[in-house]
Amino acid sequence: RTINAMEEKGYLKKETAKHDGRVTYVTVTKEGKMIFEKYNKNYFQKLALCLNHVSNDEADCMIQTIEKFYEVMCEGREK
Image (tube, rainbow, N blue to C red):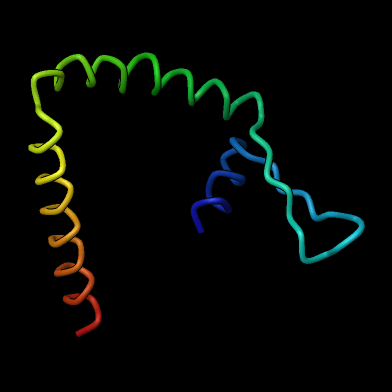
């Protein structure tokens, strides 16, 4: 679903292989590269500097907490 949404926005291009219809090639478009640069340079690199003081153990703990929260939220949708 994410790939399809990114393709609709023009960030990716999907192409079925001519030799085997089960194979799909996904390439990044010029627009996709531009959006990557925007977020990588303008957002994530700056965010990384702000979070530089967070230890690996603290980051691992946060990841585990987010994963547990996600599981709970998914269970709530199924009910």
